Image (cartoon, rainbow, N blue to C red; front, side, top):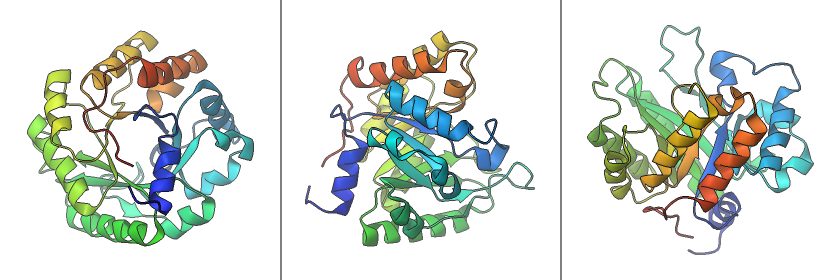
Length: 264
């Protein structure tokens, strides 16, 4: 890949050389409320960096509370869209940040959430397309979080639905895509095989134990996915430090080679 701002940022994102990622989303504070006391985000970021997570996903305002020393080994993804649990349609994501915000903050990538099948799908697609154009201008990698949600999303985790979501993200100009799990490594492998960009899988519903979380992570990686994004399952653990380290080791050392490895 030609040396430019985007390729350099992608190299920082995939700095461990395995071609895989363990991302920890913390953008859900916008939707659901705080994770705890005011200093919690900074504490968690420090823990993630220390235990081997690759990147953290935050809204622009919370980036101010990260300590500089934590970011030497932890990449930053600034999330640009959101909605709240108070809305009459929480699937209606709107842009609340910009690529220029992310550039100013020193981000390694930006992310946008798009819900296909809801009544505001059209607006979300337009917004995502505009962000992709700005990312091309600024050399900023784009992660698109694609889900089938809303009245017209009849089979949100069916392999054919997921493959379509991945195709939409690719067509919009995404450099990475995150979506739901299809339910089995075999069917997810079929989805991964359709993707020309790195595909990450969302952590999904809360699990009852760390063992279940790790078993789920193993399934994801067995499908050939580039990696996983886990937030609530990590922070809900009684021993989050141990779980983060275990997931990081699994992602980078204990899974088959990804079928859709990043090319840069």
